[in-house]
Structure formats: C-alpha cells, structure tokens
Length: 360
Image: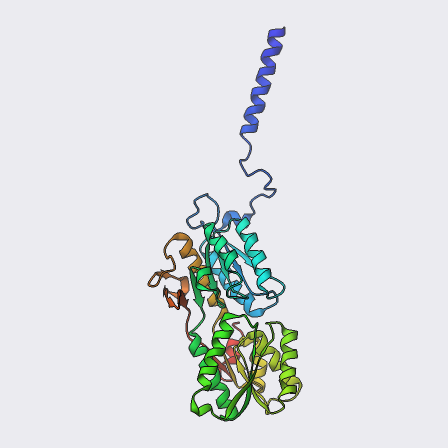
C-alpha cells in the first residue's frame, strides 16, 4: 500500500512539473498580453531579439501643431518599417525637460533617439551617454551640436530660409522702415541660424533704409508670443514689419495684428502652418509666408533612424539610403558634422493657401 501511494504521489508531482514547463515564456511581470494590433503588424526590421525595434522622437514641447505634424510623420515612417514609434515632448520647451526624457529612453533601451533640440549644447552629456549605450542618435529641425549626434535632418537650406524672409518683408514694406523678428527660444539652433542669415542679407546696400530694431522670443508658447508681439507694437510705434520664423509665433502675431486692425500698417511674414495661417493670408494680414512640410521632416527622420540602426548608413558624408516615398537621400557635410537636406522652403500665398490649408 505504501509503495502504491509513493508511486501515485511521484506521478502527480511529475505532471505538475510538466504543466509548469508548458506555460507561456513571456517575461515575468510583463503584465500585458500582445494586442491584436501588435500581432498583425508588419514584420519588424532587423530585430535581433525577436521583438520590434524601438524608435523614439523628442519634440520641443507639447501643444505645438508643427511638432504634432512632425511626430506624425516620424510615426508613419517607423510604422511602415515595422518598428515601434515612441513619441515624447515635455510640457515646457526646456533642455532640462528633454534631458530627463533622454535618460528615461536610455533606461528603456530604445534603439534610436531623434531629438528636436531646445538647446544645442546642453543635451550633449545625455546624448553621448545614449550613444555609448549603443543608441543611434540624430537630430532634426533644431540641431544639437555635431558631437551629440550622428547626423542632422535639415528641413531646408538655412541660408535660403533666412535670406528669403528678409527679401519678403522688404517687398511688403517697400524697402523702407523698421522691422522686428519674433523668434522661438533664444537657444533654438535653427532659429538662430536663420536670424544670422537675415542679418547678413540686411547688409546688402539695397536694404539701407530697413532697420532691424528687435529680436524678441516667444519661446514657441502662444500666450508669450502674443505678449511679445504686443510689446513690439508698443515699444516701436513706427514698426512696419514682423518676421516670425516659427509657426507658433507667426500665428500669434497674425491674431494680434487682426485684433488691433493693423493689417495695412504692419506687414507679417515668416514660417507658418497653412492650416493656421490661411485666415490671415486670406484676410491680407500676411501677404505670404513660407514653410516646408513638417510631416516630411519627421518622416525623413524616421527613415534615417532606421537606416542608422540597420547599419545602412553611419552618418558620414556621402552615405546614401532610400527614404520611402521621399526617394533617395544623401548625407552631406554640415560644419563639423553631417546633415540630410529635405528641400527648399515653399511659398504660401492667396493663390494656393486654400489648397494647402487642407493638407496640414
């Protein structure tokens, strides 16, 4: 009887062990099952561990329509490539907030980080730490310094962006009068580069009757950009034109000029989203302005990030890769670093704004 009891007990224990070994091998503590969307997704690109590669983008701050479009383009590209997009942006456009997010992404062991920098140099320690951990780092739109990234995605030639805005405001004010610039943050590398080219363009003798009286900073926050526009109008009652090379700033300035009935007194141009600026272009508050497609900027960054992770490119001058619907792209020199150029700035005016405001 004792022998039979021992044999039965042994059999029960063996069955229990076999049952335990047959359970799912999902990581302990994962706490979530794979969703239908995840299981139906396209095959991940070069996933050595069997899971999706993780591609993160960090924009300047939340509540920025331009940034939302940029992240949308990035997400579209990564989704096409079968990766997992991670979209992040702090509440305020500060380097400190972005550094915290970079640290979090390092802990999450993402494969790539694309950042729209709030400061060109302050992010360097965190980004170098990411690269030392094997994470592929690139910047887009607003660059970090060349030591903090492998490559930069540039929306258009900075010189042409800066010069064309001076040419535009000069045409609008008849080549004579006081003008001001309403920028984003004082540390924004793209804004500062464009403004430097604006100043160089102004050195041409044909602009001798135009005076740049102020560069103001709205920090890409709508309320502050409104306040800065109002301050410009109060401080410079003879102001003839405002250049706002920021989508938040130009829309804020357009509202102020509209509310104050100044469309015939103060001219406005810069870089804006067609959907936000259509009302001001149609009303004549802004005769025309420029931009590129922020969706394409993010999309190009997504494909570049994937190419870096796959090893198709390393970020060196001359590297080439296919960027989905944008076609073939080549990496070129950019000072001490390298960049990938999207294209030329595009002019939006009363003739085409109705068409483009439906796009973005």
